[in-house]
Image 1 (tube, rainbow, N blue to C red):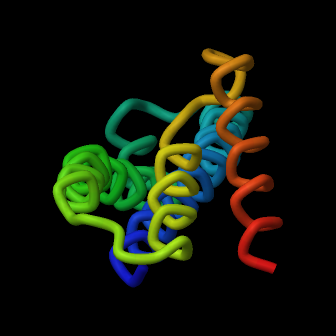
Image 2 (cartoon, one colour):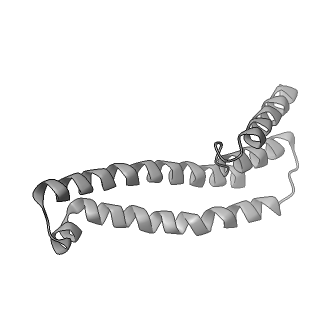
Length: 118
């Protein structure tokens, strides 16, 4: 169950960083356009450094998330909680708009299992 929590935390962090990246990128673009900065001046902006930090962390997560999921996949669930955790991790790793039917089925299955444990 702990492994599933770690996996979900990585998914949430990745989603949060993607949103943050877009915000910082927009601010950087607006500042550079408004101030008509050279490329060197653009790279010196605090937002450019933030963008690089976010990008570096996203690169790490891009590699770490599949590793965690692989470990989780190879770990046998010994309880209903463990099965639910594994399914939540799988759902967290999906893009709902890319596989809407599969995502909805997975969510429904998780709800069914959660109802069974009650």
